[in-house]
Image (cartoon, rainbow, N blue to C red; front, top):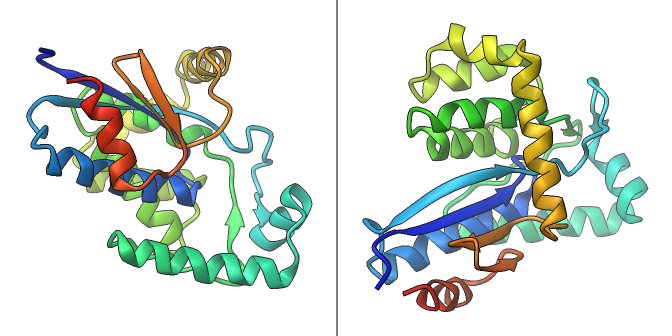
Length: 212
């Protein structure tokens, strides 16, 4: 019998499926009564590592990257809003919404891990981006979100100026790519088994049960 179950969640904070997948994983953990046996660590993945500082309008980005039409994009937003409601998360898409660079987010998430605040910060960043119309590439925004979860703002912001922290994130991302992670969310249990995608609760329960 395994005492602790280590779960790595590889994701990006601008990925809508990542918060939906996490909510389902969270419910699976609760339904199996594993809350005290699970250790979750968020791992970095940049959906758009080359995204410039100014970001890109979401509709234009969807059309360029995925070939979305205005109609399919509008339908996707409606579908995500409905799916979000099912897991108690609000997606509030808006016309001027932009996809932004998330590298600083991942640096801060790595720092938050030192204080056991990684999940709190991750959820805060999901809400900031998808619900509250905030630019999570803006360091002033990040400073406020870091403060909101109880991190030392000055120390947190210093991490964003430290090239070694940035290099560490890029190296970690590269390692996950080398292990075969090519889409998010990817949930890895005890570094032995994994599933990619925002699976329903039952799918995550099966994954967890294989570990216990």
